[in-house]
Image (tube, rainbow, N blue to C red; front, side):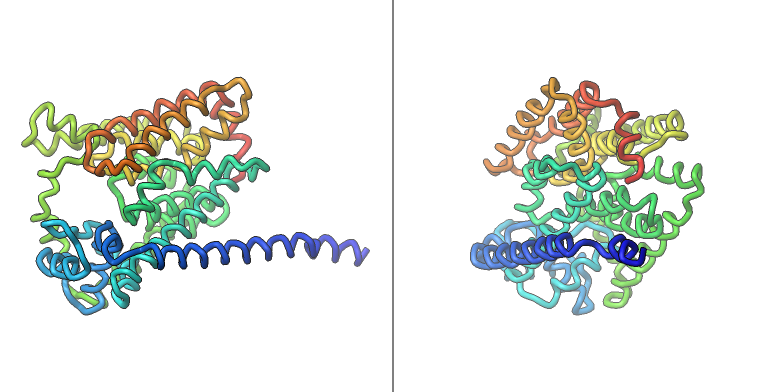
Length: 400
């Protein structure tokens, strides 16, 4: 009896050795990636990616200076090899600055390598968690996530959208078992709050309806800590951010979103028009949740919710579409469950065109990316219509 109990309590040695081997292989791969990045990353391409704005902000912050000062940031970026004629300022709120603090202690090239590795680690973690959310199937369909065009765009630009993806994935993975941790993970989603507005409406309604206040507590605790951290270095960080927001001139930039297109077509000077789609999206999201509140599942219902949230976002770039990866993988598994389904071929076609745009160097502010949020949403609906129903899939992964 004791022998049987010990066998149950102790995993077989072969399983432990396999897990250890996986950890060793993962660490070896990261070490190889670090070496390749260090050798391939020149000072020029390190200084001419989005990461240079985070590096410059970190440099300013750790020295107690304003990380949103355009002229000072421009001087730092030019010293690192920035080619553009105007500064690239980090526009994330001050509570996101905790991510940039390590970059304040290293040079631009080293910072770019470390930042790229961090993004890669977060991406690997998110995809692994998403495989678990989908039931840990024996196939390797989750590897398609690495070929998702916005993923490549994020890696090339060094964008923070991958952190938001990890936050969303952690919430999906832990919201049932570790609600406090799931709420804390939402801090990473708050790095880009404009992408999650309808999602946030439903999240708040879900918390109230199910009395899952631990999620709210975790989010509040993590946000509070993140808000205090930059004050240690710059006590005037919030007035500095407000001053930057007033003078940034975001409304004069072209951002390839349907919301911006609506404003341009109707009345370019009326900035409020850009928020009409997201307002309508929030109303739809509340109705969508209310109809399904008794059977709500964040993995399945939340996927469609995120697709709509990004579609109606008042401000987003192609790299931000990486937060759709949970929905994309969920639809891929749904479509793969039906052998007669052809929607995977449509995904390959859509993703292939988007990959070509990224690899051909199409700038992120190009109107050529306007079609992608619509394409992902339409494909998702087709994939789930021909595959298992959302209700059936929800029951399958209801214990994620």
